[in-house]
Image (cartoon, rainbow, N blue to C red; front, side, top):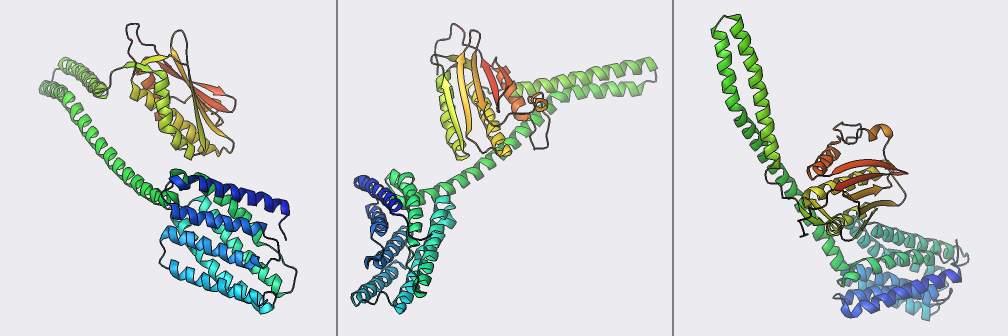
Length: 454
């Protein structure tokens, strides 16, 4: 790997020029103009490094300026205390290079050793700053930039060895510039400059969002635990109250049986005990049913497009982070009679199951979940399809049963989803697909007297 072909240099120089043009277009609306200008200067220097002919006396100076611009940009982003010292050191080194170039000391062996040593020392500063950014963000693009900086360090060392050994000049550095130009393209078009706040604003927002998300999770877990304790206490107290009167009759019957030795009377008491037990069981069951239904929202006429569209907006971002594309297609003009929260819970559970299937199977192709809604004469059909590989025929027969598996699934989610579908007057069924699964949720139309939709 020696000199980079002219065609490749031209292509990557054009890519860098396009990035500079994009930054220039964002300059009027960007709140961090100084930061944007520093980044643009760094990109211009990268482009010049690719187009300057090999052997030019400007080559060494350009390399130093690139290191300077990179360190200046990172030090300003992080507000590093050594930023001013760094600038003075670079200015001094560049002045020495210009002086020695004027005196034509460039080709000598001492000059090659001097240039290589101090270039490596200066390059270490932006690499160290970038390593700090990578540790905090843990993002792939920052790790790739850090690797590119390390490759630049290695390329400079290799060029120095070639010069000291008297070998022909090998421009290894231009290869690493090509890699860096790809990374800067990602930063230009996918980071803070799109938000008009710059990289510093984006990095600050990212840390704030992470901290807020962590606090939200802790609060949510505490509230969930509190709700569970409250609900458990209410259920226990209610069931005990319902069973208390029955227990009084059980106690009285048992005492009557013990007080008399007549076998016929004892048998009659035993029959009464059985009846009391059945009555107590029914009372407790009726209470739990009433408790589960208390506070449920009323079924209403829902616009199917708005219902599915709102669900897709809520879940699309989370699925995208897992590499899953969510598509939705809804026939216009459809309305269903259902409880919004319960139907959203069913859809959320189906999408979550599909996402878990992709993760467990290690699926490497395009991950897609499709939600399609269309009307039939008797009901509205919502189909949730995925290409996660589907399930085995044996597992398909137990999908809606509570049956723990080796993978840790209990089946409770699909069991509750079908129950919610049925409580809304619909059904939930499974149909295998080629390389995937399809869950079909049917919901009733509103009564003819219902005209309002929400």
